[in-house]
Length: 191
Image (cartoon, rainbow, N blue to C red; front, side, top):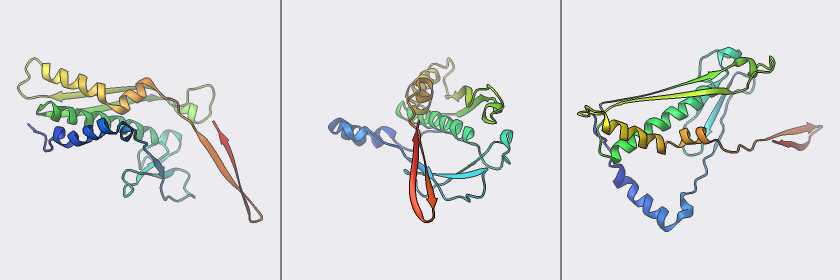
């Protein structure tokens, strides 16, 4: 059995107060950028989150499209974001509710037809379904009532889960530099 090592309510109290006094401070913009990687390698890349600039996530093409499988593909990273958010949210909610956890497991599965990525015809490009299974054991919860309340609360407050469920507009801009005889110029295409 594991009791939370951090008092989440105490930790969040001044944050909540600041958001009440300054509502605009709760509006956060997350940023992730390309990290340093070998541009001659078309199968791998690195990504660095602004919130933790010392961290670099390595990713690469999935073996189903020619990758070597030595690092997570972008789909794995997406599912990993969902699993991490679900588990962290559940842990924080359990700590707030003063519920000890005996065990916790989050498993994410997704369906994907690689033929769309390989431009082999009229196949979907991207994941077509995601299933998130979260299992938790709460000590001395024979009827499962506390665990059920915990899971419902965690599901309600999981940012990544709710973003995927409800969708959001995604603006995408592609730009390239044209280099001709030493005269730099940029061309871009927004979509």
